Image (cartoon, rainbow over all chains, first blue to last red; front, side, top):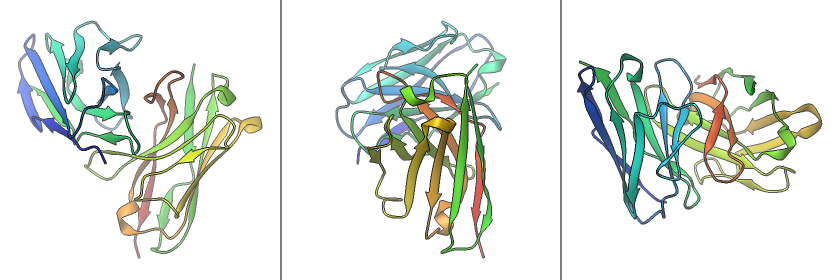
Length: 107
Length: 119
């Protein structure tokens, strides 16, 4: 199985700060990567797919990048509503696997 | 508006069975692959099963293969997950999710249903 290692496990950011979350795959996944946001008590929501494509309706402050085994999610200007857990997911090979998650809090 | 509403969760003893349902609306159900994803309490996400549009093809990770069965009824716009030989490690919130048309991501999720496996 492809292991997805997310870092950091948690972080705290100030209002307006730029935040980056990383995901490292145990083998190349050819940009078959998505990022999800999960607010407390809610179901996950798709933010980014194919490593860098913004899902409809997602604010443009969210962006994704990367290639090969290394991918990142950037939030350009932390907002209160961005406080949530974030997960990456690879869909390159079955079984589809998720990263362990990053808890983002507002400082 | 796309809606996915799960039902059928609850408390079940180890070794017993449970069947989850997901009622879909707001889109042409028969045109989309569907999936189940679970999340153990305070843990990450785990993909559980996927089914093709017609139901002829199904996919599972090793952790549930042979115990869980995903199925669908396109006439009723409904998705199911039959869970047999349940273990304590199957305790989780189970989400019904729609797979995107062109790739293997999940663009809509239900609110989730809790399954607790305990004696």
